[in-house]
Length: 292
Image (cartoon, rainbow, N blue to C red):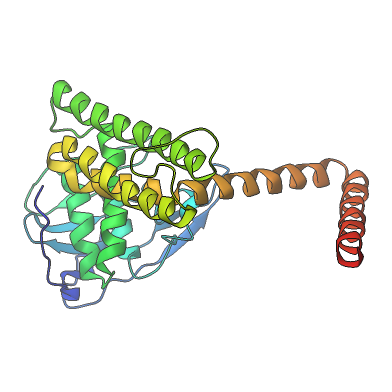
């Protein structure tokens, strides 16, 4: 896949009207959302369509009908600090949701030129549309990498079985290798019995530099096996390698929070006692370390 350069053109988005009201190309898109919680999770229904003039497909209107539901930008909660659920990229995210469909529903869009948009093409439209909203190049390539990786595992309508599995194997191998090598690099940095060639027995700062270099070089090389998605492979691998420890820390902290939350809901008294005990223990340790 070639790294294309897109000149941002905000006018490509316009008011898409409604199923009974024609689009207005001269008006800015109007994002009118109705919040729904009927499925146990927060979802939204678009009251008006979003119109977008794609460079290759022509006009796209999302959604096709009122049954469409969206969770805004589909970002795992663990990474919303990196890519928020809403922001400048929201019109493009809603467009992408309509083009790919939900887990239990078909795609929901109208192509005025009659194009069928497969999932990998929808990902490309998403990336270009983010540029047209003014989303920065780093964020849009990060987001495109995430949706392209999801497409690899879910599959795109225009791919053969062999091609789908070739992409899946390359992606799964990259993720597994990065996680394993990242774990070994951490053990090496702690001098716990592992010595990777690019880190070895060196001063800690030198091992850290070697580990960071490996976190870029290894995913870059593994990404070449992703074929037309090699950019996504390199970006995903490097991002996973650099954020591995941050992600594990966030998982542990989130797990601790959820455990405390459940305990407090199940037994407020017990939760208060344990919380008070933790504070008392912390005060005792603090006093001991500060005075002796």
